Length: 283
Image 1 (cartoon, rainbow, N blue to C red):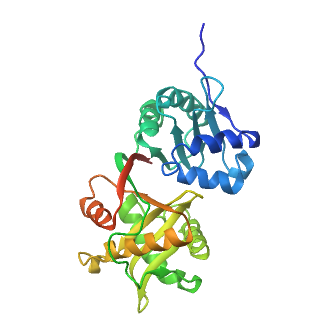
Image 2: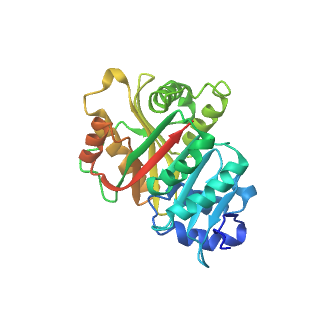
Image 3: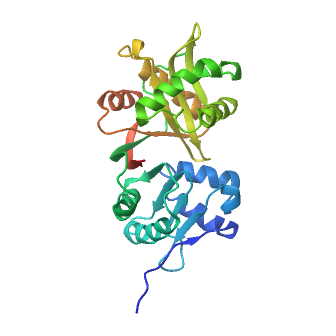
């Protein structure tokens, strides 16, 4: 009887193969590549197991099984990799808050997991992945700058509002916001949180939430409701792009809900182009 290839937990010896796999799509794999570049592929260093799938000798797919379940597979390997990853995920039980990544890898995986893990709180099957490699096409807002550590208290309400608006639940629900505040503070200390703050009020904010040597990913773009419709989001995002290209990585990316027409139009004005499709399953 032929047995379907299964997934295995990768270790430090697999780092070259993982790096080569992720390099096939550096924008789509920015988050995973950044983690591997920082700490390698050992489960202890990563803080979660990294599963690998191969039907032959070469690694064809990986899936990080941490707070987020993040799969990536080479074209053509998405379905068999999903079968292997779903088998492991069902045995382990759901520990993640989100399944997120390239839609070609996420969608078959969720199809297999939904009967045991569902229903989910939200399923966003089509989120255009956008990228820009050159300078922004519009003038950056000069008042957008890295947030200082002593401004975390001013930034936090805006960050909470953004998260709640985007995800649909408050980041304070799990532990009163201790973990979320730590995450915001870490990004500020790393110089990866940018905002336009005037008289203690945040008018615009964004974070560079994922970083690899090849690319970075902008997250949490938000404009204060009372200041929307004035072009602040467009000019602010252009400032984030200019900063990120100069300081962090040569390619700047983000993903956006397909139904968010105003945001998609703003990103197009900045100069972003579609390079792929992401998908998210939220619990």
